[in-house]
Amino acid sequence: MNEYRPLNLSYKGDRDYLHGSDIITAIFTNFPDIKKNISIKFHKTSFHPIFASYINASHLSELKKSTELNAILSYRDETDCIKIIAITEDTSKEIKSRKEFEENLVTKGYKIMDSEIFQYKPIHGNFIERVIALYKELLRNTVSKGPWLFVRIDLDSYKVNSKSISIKIVNEIGGNMFKASITTDYGLIGSIYFIKGPK
Image (cartoon, rainbow, N blue to C red; front, side, top):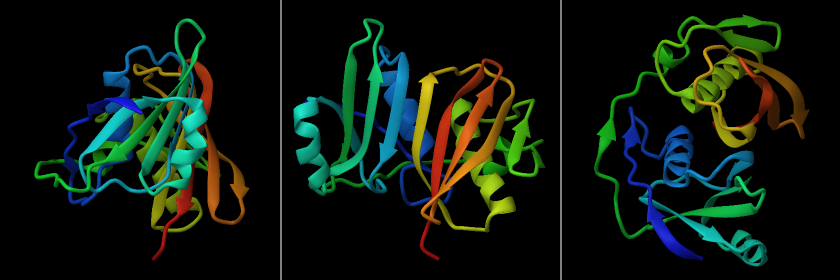
């Protein structure tokens, strides 16, 4: 790996870990060439300051076997080149900052019909915050109260200004993972995955 880029994130609300939506948003900010075929997979929770770095595909399997990898992101840039970014944490340092966060404001105004949740007018939160919070709300209302852990999101492209979002459960994988489709003003744009966490 090379060129470690610190993401400089704070704890959100009363959480003692870094929120997936903040990690994803920070990656998009620090790597503006992320354009399409985006896939982000979380391997473990981040409790310490994190860094992002490009890695070669040849090093990926070795890194996955280690305990260092927190998340991995792959995408295609504007030249259609596939790139991979690894997220790791510095366990020797602590996060001392915290910001306010009320998830109920992010999901405010949602409606649920069967296995699908809708929000047409965003009140609070960016696109990624809304998608993650809405899907968790859907699972809590239709499957179980949880806890639920966000582990993956796949996006055809990164659209940040969609007013409407609908998320529909499409598959249960192994009785523990739930996949849902993401539809916006631009149509179907991707999928999101949660797993049941330990109680």
